[in-house]
Length: 327
Image 1 (cartoon, rainbow, N blue to C red):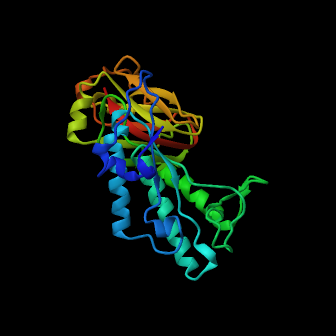
Image 2: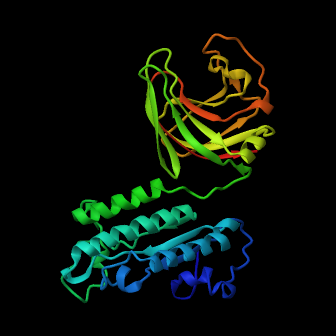
Image 3: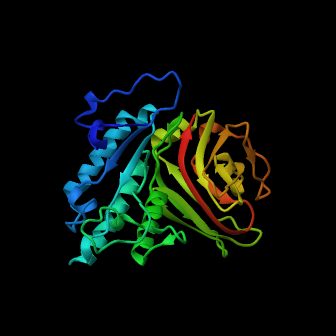
């Protein structure tokens, strides 16, 4: 693992030409790291209480984008070995403003780190918050009581929860082979009965709802843009990332012909609680659903229309889908 001089974020920006990775005979074993406490008076010293400015946001965006371009996009992992922000120091005034900006910093840093493929590590020295001594450089970073493993205050618990939410709600960078599919919309489709679907877009598409009754067929439709639709007509496979509730789902590719009684061609998969990449060979892995009893029709790939996702069966469901790629 390599850091630049003074653990600086500048090694990916202005100083990038001065930073050289050594030659290593072992493949895929090098990591680049940096610390991020900008601006220092806010995130490390806690002596100023406002972070949320366009200059500070742009500074972070530019630094993280440079690490993505110069390292993560080239297959070199990047970590933020330390980051703040510290709790406001010495129990002084403007504590509400300081805590609000502290959480905004967490939201932005952890979300943008995830989007750029960077793994952030909060500087957490353990113990109890200091608050009282100006000579204590570390206590006010503390989040966890090491005696019981619990957050040491309500504020600390909120910081931890905001870290987790920022990571979970961010869209990770597109990786791997193939062409990223682009969609003009993700639209819920609800049947005339009690079945219903809705989405909670947050970078990834979270699809939730209920399919009730034997004839329930609530689903979600991802409508491709023109370029993606044309690529779908010649793809030999497609892949996507999912997290779910352990239930089985169908990803369907309707064609003009299969729209009769919604007899779409489909692939059934299990959405586990862990991030999983699903790859479907076209048309080898596709089978036709004959839900309407209209019989089997030919899969004519040139007449594909979109992607649809639906629970296999009847129940409540919670599925998150992202990074659909065409091969």
